[in-house]
Image 1: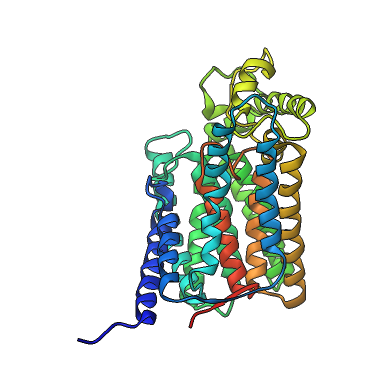
Image 2: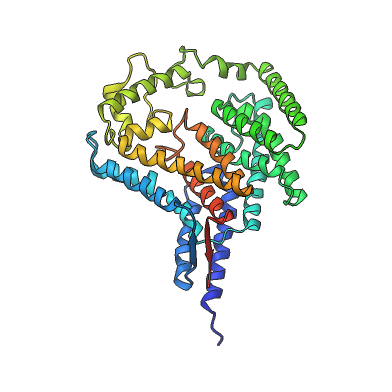
Length: 408
């Protein structure tokens, strides 16, 4: 009876991992209770039984990621905010450690240009179908903030923030097959009204900035690029002016007449009150913060402004969230990580003109802008954005040659 070699076993497991990632690309909008990235990671560990890859690492990414995780954990050890160590450690594991599995796939899975193109194309198809559903909901059902078949508004928001800049940049990449470029362009175009109708203001800002940068950098005729930007701006302005619901999204920025529980039209004054309270927490707990997942309790019992209507679980700002929960100790690791990410990606982009670097920079920039008004990195209630960030970072490092793996 013939025996099956370890290499064949490893190859079959790698194929299962690939199909798992394709399934993730098709279902990420649903935020399934089964974490497909975790399943793929476990399969990768099983593959190590049969074959050990040779890893070559360029850059200091691993050091900065490790420093970030260690410093946040140190803040848990030295925390004086009143939360129990067990509850903080459980939150640390869930919000900081578990998502790292998506990054570790770079050591377990063979990221190739073809595989990434397939996964990205699957996402593009899902985005296009969901955008059509959003447009349908807006005009037919008059839904205030339609999300299509996505699970919730913020998952839709962060998915747009991550993926749309990538698709738009690749529209200009002539080394890709024409059919893929057309698919990506179609997805971007049909997403424009869908993004507007979904009503998430920080998405409007972040995608406007990343899109303008992309058009100015990668359109050969700069006058044509400016004309496209102005035309798109006029069309979008017309869409806003034609909809009372969209105008309302601007009016509530300063309108404080919101009723308790009306989070669809939450005014920005509420967030300013959260931020003021967060700064008071930082002053009271500067070194190690109030403790991971302890913001809500302290805000409710001690720091909530009497005129505030909401009692949030996070301060709707990643920078404040990190400083509040883990103090200067954890915040320093967080800032160092992202400063290094920008330093390294811009260095590679300028030096080699790397497509992967430009794609990652634009997606990262869009993502970081969202940090200003929500907690979409290591956040309290929505974990998928953090998994997506680490997964996209892993794919970038593999495609740019920063981390190389060879099996056999």
